[in-house]
Amino acid sequence: MTGTTHKLGDTRRHYWLAVGMADISGADLQRALEEGRITHGDWAGMVERCRGCNWADGCDCWMQTQSAGEATVPRACPNAEMFDAVIGSQSDA
Image (tube, rainbow, N blue to C red):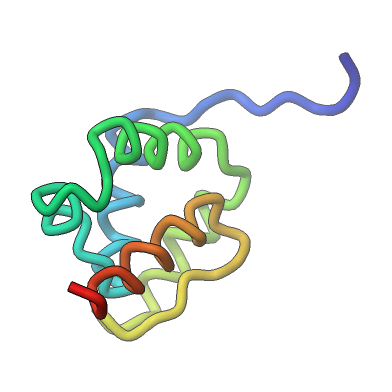
């Protein structure tokens, strides 16, 4: 196996980073979970992808400069597509 490895980050920290990114982007993950648009497994996968992200420090700094519910998730976020899908499904609901 080649390449660099990245130690997974603290689960609690990355849980809260994912919650923060959801708030900043306007993705209502709780509603999506309650309505069956995402599963508990999807949510756990989001936290795990966040834990493996090399951009976590940049994410934290970026979120501090954004207004809640108005930001577009940066493509550097490994969960950008999931947040986009949740936001898109909110408009369909």
